[in-house]
Length: 252
Image (tube, rainbow, N blue to C red; front, side, top):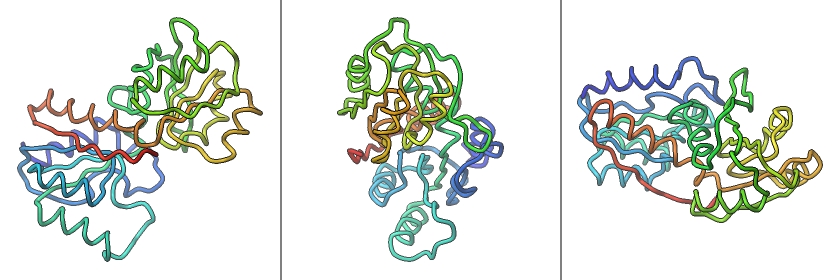
């Protein structure tokens, strides 16, 4: 399939142009590749290890959540050079999608993790520059903070850091994957009992306790594997493109 056709589809499907992000270069095609795409590899992070694995698996296109460019213009030296060289020499196009993939209703990290927890989605919260990122919903049967923690641990197959700052009965739960603890005020404004995210800062503990909300940290990486895998499956179902997931867990 033509790379240009895939790029046009992804940009529209994920609403890349209309979605704000921390930097414009985070979303879309970051490194050009072959005109024809036969094998797709998806990964959470564009690291040296994941790019090398994508090359070993014969990828023509690599789709990631965390791309190459975060701090603005940087010299192509050291590890930055090594990554770009591996992509070019391996004939791999790199496509990155950050916040648009967190917030998407069908293949987004937040919505998918919320559904995996059994939430009936009700709406979005966690506004970034006018666009909500997270999703919230209700549980069919209310649970306890520890009960929700056990359920999240089962879904992610990972240990959970639980801060029991909210009510004893949890029904309204918000999910904002990755570093979503900074949106705790938005979760409070939405009337949520608990906020599920990846990680937080030291002060997140006191934010949760003093604001009266339970917060659960499942790991930045673990909460953000859903989107790229769902996007790979979506491309396979729509265009017949085979795909593979490169797993590179960090424990964080």
